[in-house]
Length: 420
Ligand code: SAH
Image 1 (cartoon, rainbow, N blue to C red):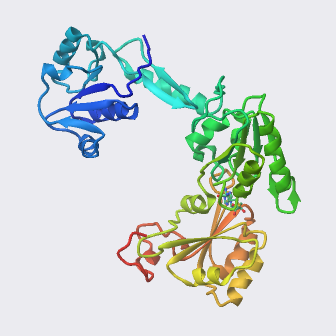
Image 2 (image 1 turned 45 degrees about the vertical axis):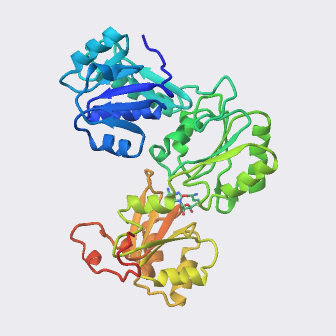
Image 3 (image 1 turned 90 degrees about the vertical axis):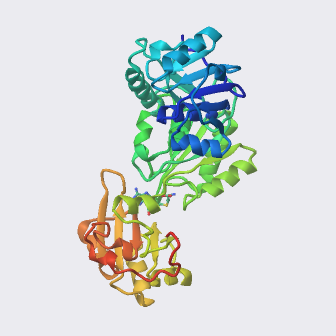
């Protein structure tokens, strides 16, 4: 039978030092067990956990008296597991045998934990653990895609549970739903109300249960669908009525996402609110275009700037510095104006630049061009918002091709010897 064990503070013995033993030891530690590993030699992870005091490692062969006082034994030796199982049987201690489950008196299910629930799958046929893992993965997929109602029946609040009356700002990443974090997916699946932007992983919205209220408040430039104050009011209204509210935002909620204002508005209204980080487009757009925002010997800083306003002296200094990569968000609407400001300020028209539009979506486009040609090239290719404009040596086309010449020319790094 499948049963939940509370291992917190209880002794668990792991016999053997291989990678399976290390994994079992790690799992027991995560459950709060007091873990002892007995093995003459062990996997590096065991040594590291022992050095950190997370487990006790006795470097010798196992003897029967090692089972004294233990609640559960994991036999992972591959050689003397049957013997250990025999000792466990005599002493009435449950024993899991990694190499041959049928030898033991207990088996470990394939587990997925999400949204405050753990799902365990055991193959009835003890000899087929791979099947349990496959079933588990399919169930995990259902859970993570919000096809399972994970709303708790009682008000408990943990990192993966969205409580009634609570607001969570979810970083949705640049667009591809697969780039959302597991936590964001899990919390989204529990929401009664989802307030979304135009950008971000809008594809996940179609997967929500039908009874979930989806409110798009996305702002296209010039077509403001909802003001920031109206968004605050929506958050407060729905959470105030006891609903679980997910505020799904593109990228990371706090990078040009006005997430801070939404947190402040909720707090001022006495609404509990928290934030789940997201993969920001500032970096993700570069990644998918093969642009490493820092690269040892070429670029050792990243300067991220909002392209709505005028550049400051600090921005201009960053653009003049060959060791800095600049990422401009929201820069496409005023691209011509931005580029003229830069060239008027004496920034080299040949400065390598790239525009990555609709990164991680079906519409993804990448343009590489020197700064002075960027506007014409984007216009010719019909590339516009949303896009991240990147400037700097790392944006040269094919920078990550092994034979790329530009990379060999190392830009002066002011902090040589320090990992960029
Ligand atoms: N909080 C978001 C940024 C919001 S500002 C984040 O961390 O990514 C909106 C700007 O983000 C857009 O104007 C564009 O510059 C950029 N952006 C968002 N999604 C993008 C995508 N998929 N591809 C390229 N740029 C994107």
